[in-house]
Image 1 (tube, rainbow, N blue to C red):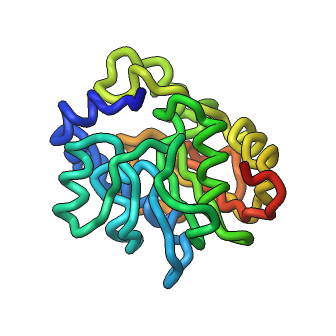
Image 2 (spheres, helix red, strand yellow):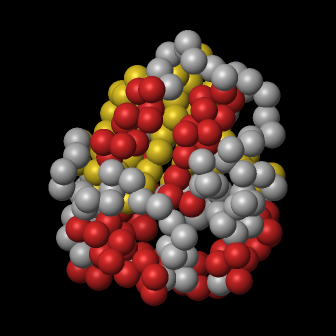
Image 3 (cartoon, rainbow, N blue to C red):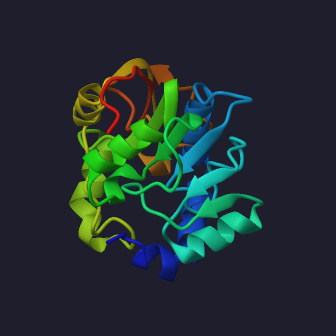
Length: 215
């Protein structure tokens, strides 16, 4: 069952987080902009209220939260009511798929990634952004998850776990960027993303669909 309750009940608080943490949000967006393709047909899986899809010019998405879909529609986006484990689009449709901080909320991560693989064209790209559970911010989220409006039911992953899932599905890792260096509250400008892992708390992986396992 989709974990939509906190997002339906606290949509305003969700939006406010991005205002209060403006520089962290813009740093994450800058890392995504490094590798999200331009002028290609894409979809965001877990579109939320469209705070990433809109600036990245991704019109199509899926989002199980009614309140989040309503806000995304106000931003001119086209979210469908669906979950990542059952994406209502045909095989081999999209040039790329984006998933930002969604993997920690899905019920079945492997099924969600299988579905993402299915809807991508051969040589299409999957771009996943997430907070690494072993990073400074990830450890803070884990320690305080029971106090959080949004993360109580979340499951966090390490970069190594995500990479292993992707390789099992015959995705080829092409590029990895990281950002969010230091505490969220200490970020007072847009940070320049770095390649690789191990320093930044927010990780963005770009992987290419190689064909093969396409259940």
